[in-house]
Amino acid sequence: MGSLRLPLSRLLTFKAIAQLFILGCTWSLGLFQVSSAKMVMAYLFTIVNSLQGVFIFLVHCLLNRQVREEYRRWIKGTRKSSPPTQTFSLSRSTVTTSPKMAPCITGCGMGWEGADGPSPTKS
Image 1 (tube, rainbow, N blue to C red):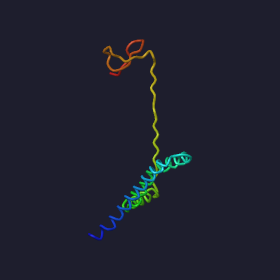
Image 2 (image 1 turned 180 degrees about the vertical axis):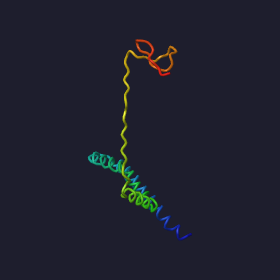
Image 3 (image 1 turned 120 degrees about the vertical axis):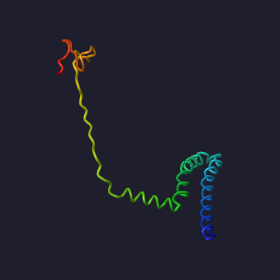
Image 4 (image 1 turned 90 degrees about the vertical axis):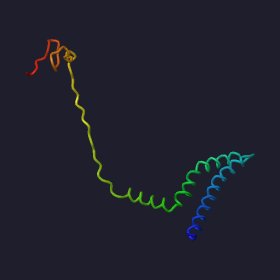
């Protein structure tokens, strides 16, 4: 058990120092925005600050053995031949009605009633 703690504590120490450097580097560039180097430091601050997420991803994810193994599995899974894609087409049928036709609501049963009276129904 003690032999596992030493590499783990070294890794955690490295990650903590790396994160401190990543975050501290950005803000030290921000503090040096004085006099003639103001524009250069402002650009460096912006670039390094925007890359902080990438650096943190590299330190905490790619240095983790389990995460690397999952990425390998995911990449191998995407390289396998995917099943053939299925194409579905939808058809839409339209029903046109005459403006002279209206639903029969006068007790003639189910059917349509035109301008000439009730439509014939099957008995």
